[in-house]
View 1 (cartoon, rainbow, N blue to C red):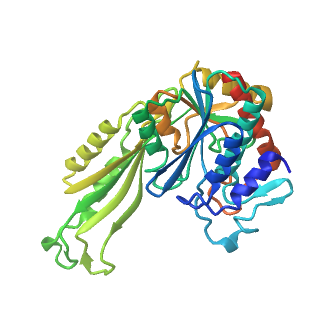
View 2 (spheres, helix red, strand yellow; view 1 turned 120 degrees about the vertical axis):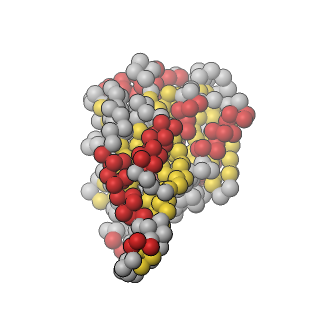
View 3 (cartoon, one colour; view 1 turned 90 degrees about the vertical axis):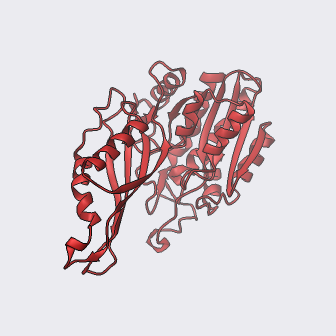
Length: 376
């Protein structure tokens, strides 16, 4: 069994459902300490984080990942136990195989190989891992970045191991991500009997025309790097459970995935203006999960990752800003260039999550090549 496959299986066996690390970081820290890395364990609230570095000056190239995984769902729906790594027909099955214990293992192996081959490399290479990416993401990389700012540490370039590929390794890289702005919208009404609507105020009826306006609004046109901003309602709750009671309140969860063509402040103002224009009595609790970010064309890391995919995978990778969010959103505001490169994402968060063994075993070679071209 190869080094990367062995470590991936070890990590999968650890039931690290967010935010429980289940010993993954200790296992990785021990390996990197033995290779001469300086390993710092950073615990904030109930979240474990690891920052391992090799080198003391110059450009800082960091690899970023997470050891936590999402819940399995009904375990009897899996063909084999989700925390018992199983290989069938050249495919490794297990929770976290693709998202993202495979990438984490590949990063560790690549960094070990890099410092073995280049003990006096230029700059600093680092590995930042958290157990709070799949959860609320409050005490993981977000808090680590606050710690870095307070202690004067920096990251210049960052490779995130999120599963990025569509069909085969290297066919797509993420060169940026949209921002995510969420809101908990409360619409106030007056509860009453459905037979006497004149004595009540139905928040569902009040919100319906405003929702139609919000859903049809063209928030922006996007730009060359991002699609237009989207607005979605993910949950609506109202009512007492009785069919003869007008509810007194409606609560809706809303979200904007927005490009650099808009700002969070501008979207908040426009959404609230639409609600006011429709006479809705409301309150919104806004939460900004992350600003949009983009590795600009011509950036050194972006050029290196594209060239590595071309040279080692024989593919000119699609350079995308699609998908959800990643912890790269916390690193980019430090001034770092952020690129995401990882395995195929077709089965992430699903029953029978998996990764092709041959592609997993090639991934450390890509990460090693990035290190060598950036710092070798």
